[in-house]
Amino acid sequence: MLCPKREQKLRLPDLDDNGDVVPHDHDEIQNDDFLIRRVNPKQHVVPDDNRGCRRISSKLFQPSSAENGGMSVDIKPLIEGLGEAPEQYVVTPVFLGAVEFSVDVARGNNLRVGYDPLPDNECHGEVWGSNRPNRFSGSQNKALHRSCRWLVELDDVELI
Image 1: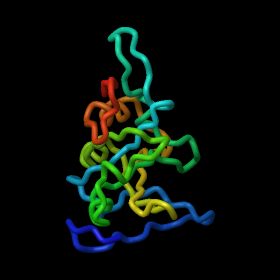
Image 2: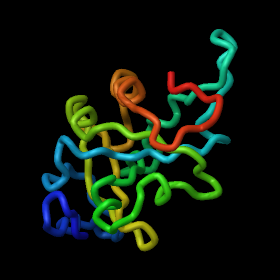
Image 3: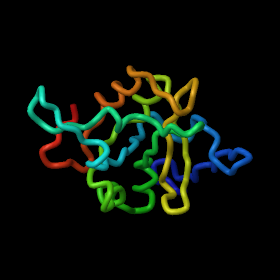
Image 4: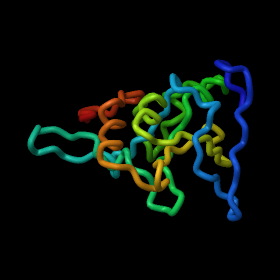
């Protein structure tokens, strides 16, 4: 994948015996890069009766429960390297919104950020827990949540 910022291709990650990406911290993904998390309003937006609004759920910043599952993200500079607008690339009929946060925030909270290309999304990555790939602590979840900003804003939905 050509990334104009670095003018090089990202190395393909190692695969396990099942053909799945081994959780890793990809050194070619730089700390000042941004990661995009797609928002499905049915899964990631909840009512907040205390504040009288709808808001993003902490579920948005949790990894998959699969054994080596991580939190699925899109790697913004890879999208831009394709000449695509990130705001359009990440929106589908299911994912109507998107937030972004820096790689530095993830790594600064002891999370690993890796490249995990999919057949239908070559800009896909994962964020994995440091001890157990599919586990984030409450403080890690909150750090990602607090640091995010809208990339594709949902009407009448608060970030926090």
